[in-house]
Image: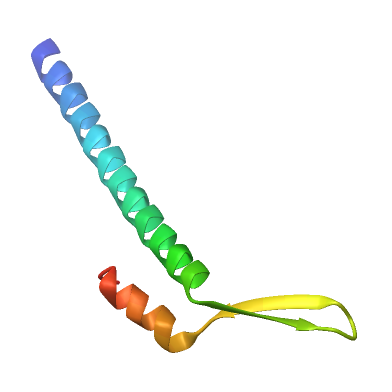
Length: 74
């Protein structure tokens, strides 16, 4: 009976390691994609300033942004 309990315990531990590993891989993939999106937004941005209020805004130029994403495989 002790061998059975040890086997079950090790199986549960192995399953937990696999699940945590898969979650880590998924999170890293999302991080890489988000960093690529941010880099594309930075490299294709258009900046404008409202001189009456002094407010500065920037946004990505859509076609350049989409081209950058395609080049990065997103």
